[in-house]
Amino acid sequence: MFTKEIDQALFDNRIDIGVHSAKDMATKLPDEMKIAAFLEREDVRDAFISLVARGIDYLPEGGKFGTSSIRRAAQVKRMRPDLRIVPFRGNVQTRLQKLADGVADATLLAMAGLNRLGQGHRITLPLEPESFLPAPAQGAIALAVRSNDEKSLELASAINHAPTSHAVMSERALLDVLDGSCRTPVAALAQLDDGHLTIKAEILSLDGSEHFAESGEGTSDEAEAIGADVAHRLLAAAGPEFIARWSDQ
Image (cartoon, rainbow, N blue to C red; front, top):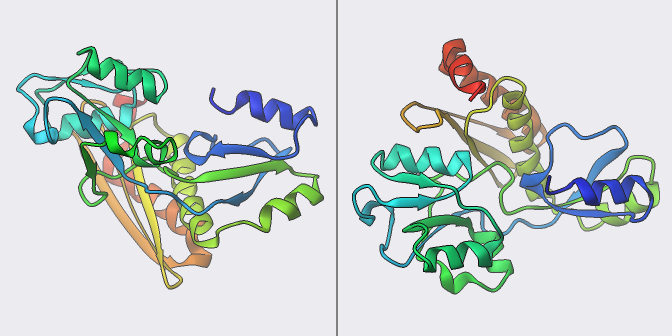
């Protein structure tokens, strides 16, 4: 939904490079398109925003939490089962206005988006990945080109940020395996340290009551294989009954 118009313009030769939020891109791309580069990743964290509480733990009993992300809803419900999830769509300004109007007591937005829009001052509390994993590819910008366009591929790849590329491709490989099996909430974060890659990931039930986490590590050259392996281990840990129960909801 978020990438369709730009992708179509690329296929129609009206543009040569498509710029996307990487987390919006499908894990299986058409043969006619490839990712040429990732820009250096912004802050990967989710931002808690509220006018009535300084953190999720401080929201009132039975409070209203605004989000349309199944991942964020499940993670919040895991922490606070008493909270009521209310739909929260629209751009950043629309969601901030909904908070001001009392539609919800709090919401979550990506730190990266807020920073890029100059809205960082709106953040009540950044949520650290150790306790609140972000969405796969969160905070990364991807450049897409036509697969047969060698000139655009060369131009875009010249500004590729290799550490971001390895990390995000690991997360996308994980998501690719999970997307083929379930529609449950998925969170993941891969990080590079001197060529060594680590990835942490989790899947949850829609209501947050069930939770499975796995991690993996290896060299940056193994990034995609590591992500896929973690995904397979998550599916094995959750079991077929878990997948069947939540995949059709």
